[in-house]
Image (cartoon, rainbow over all chains, first blue to last red; front, side, top):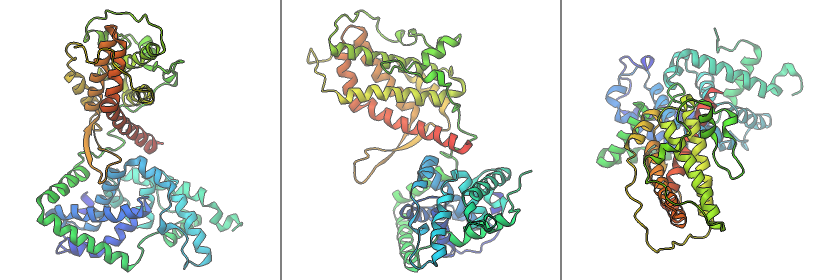
Length: 176
Length: 296
């Protein structure tokens, strides 16, 4: 949590923080395997918890990172690791082909996020936070409540697995 | 030292692919709808003390580690030796007894529970189907009681949770049989007093210590009810309650009242130990699955 601390006061109240990042938090939950409908509810609960702790959160250097932590814990608490694993079976609507996608992006979107869902929940969280949400190793460790070494290890393992699963998209393999 | 930085053109390409295809926000309409929902809920929490209390409990559970079970915290989930999980022809759990044979402790001793029960007086002499069935159930009940007692005493070492998962699963097979057969009718029409039930506080406390911090879990009270009601339970409470009800039936069985025992086991499976075992099984499964999937 230390990397989220420090005086800031950038946000007057939780509503301001909401407007800044509720869409990001929703997207993150969907990316790590929470079904869209449940993610909607979870985002609201995450911010209500943040509001409950607002006297401390308002002074954090990066309160947005704290919301990610709350959302991650809520996801684990509500769904457990098993449910997160089971979410592999249901690709969220947002990750499926869209009618307005360029032709080559449509199938790619489905392939990539199907591959993401084949990662273990811990690897999936680390990969999404590090490489999609662009958090540093330190922030990712604080959000996931693990050591920085664990983040590096899980992110590295996830990347290697994804690389194998998506090798068809590597132009050096020459078949796509 | 492992680095998670992309270190090849393929990695760079992969990361670009991840970002380009990331699912996210559905659109401004969805955002506005969510914002309206959030503002309404925020008002509700600020005006309704019961809603505020719910959020406070949620914050405590998710942020203060009250129920935050990380891999490092999960106790006793080492796997059970595959030779221990074999079942015999009637599906009896043999794990406890096999372990007992290989250890010097009293793991497999039936005396563990006999000391808490009135002395056995009647042998099973009738050979009709129902009595055979009662013997099978009694054997499964006995295996469960022996195993849970031994696990509570710490005799399962690092496999305690895995062992409990196995034993509860085996027990639910017996429960399934009781639930599937026609209703057992009592011979007397009333229950003969089997004497005092055993004091299970010590067992409950031992299990609570053993299972900490995974003891507390949440369960839907009635999965078919709308709206659903989530309740907080303890695996240790569930196991102690199951043991109490099973031991009560075993007292009848040991006294030669096989039909009474069967009636009790069937009735309490439907009303008491069945739901408790089902709930505990789900929690135990979640612990074991979570540990294995995280460490795998």
